[in-house]
Image (cartoon, rainbow, N blue to C red; front, side):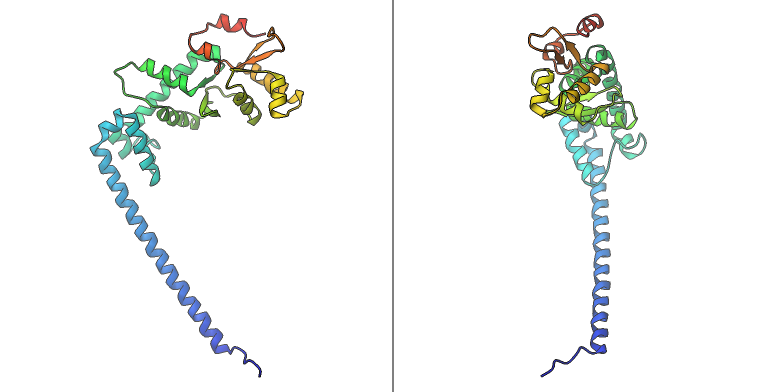
Length: 258
């Protein structure tokens, strides 16, 4: 017994049903978008009301400020995106991060002679807090990172390099690629690194290791101790814990370079 073929009418009926399903799906999708837009507008309105009510806490409490920034991020609001408008006028956050950016630049410039333009986020945080005084508005490392990101957008040479569980802050427009970054990470624990350590840990050829270290020396980001017991040591002053406890003069820095 032969199976009857599908007729033209059945095919047309099927296509009509598919078109209706598609149309209904589009209507549902549009309804969902409208509902989501309304929810976002409601959330944004509530966020603005929250900001108005708690603006003093947002300004003064660094932890509260972090949580508020995270709330803003969930709906795509960036209070730092513009120096004008509701968020800047209401909270004054634009001025806060602008002033913080200036302080970061001042600290980095003051220490450039001894660290070549690299400083740990921890040390930068300590020095910024010290410079602000105990009665000034509290500042967290999250605040510093946000201010640095704004400086980076300005093309000022600022950036952050992940090292261990924290960051190195770069304040000079030096060209650092992934090779330089992994060497900095390798030097994190001791504050220095040698060619042999790089070869053994990273499985590099000697030429590649020397090329990276020479670049760090040239940019002033590393100091060479050619009189070390076994082989030359390349010190990263930004990671050198003994140096972070005191200021080093340009003359002292020159004595440690070749």
